[in-house]
Length: 219
Image (cartoon, rainbow, N blue to C red; front, side, top):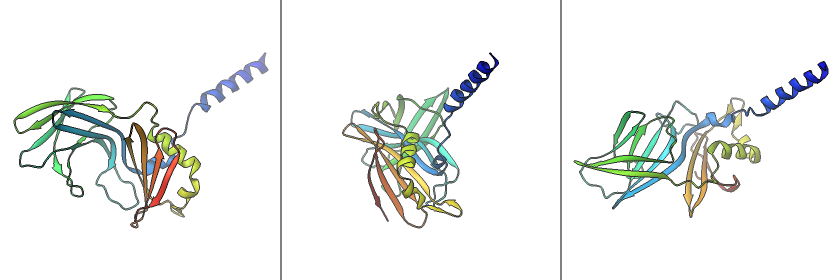
């Protein structure tokens, strides 16, 4: 009876700890993540939003600094002199940000810092001058889309030689960018590995299976 009890306890211990999955160590090196993409249209206004986190301040130096969670909103508009603002209400608080031209792309973007806002659908208020327009944003990700954690796990398992090239005596010497996007109803993960010396390795991963579809040097 005693032997049976010991074996049963050992089995319970094994089951309990086999369910505890250790976090992928490469997650700590992600400095720019867009894990969901939303789109909403009212009339001729289209608002796109990306949720995730980004290093702040963002520096392409191969290192990961302090990260900030939030939404990047992009507005498809013809630029004019009228001030445009986006408002988001959550948990009794209202957050707002003005749209400004992006320094690189000249697209009108706004950033609202908010953590743990994992919604499939939510409504924002687009303010154009004195006009306030509610816009419902819906996630564009299909049900079979894998998470960024799963995509990174599969990359770690199947592409270890590629990742090993970024190691030295000081450990992993690169920062990782990850962005989900949907094309023709199919999800894809873009993964960038930047070493901080001007070189960027760009990877395209199937967002449903995790298969590596393409890899090339950008710089």
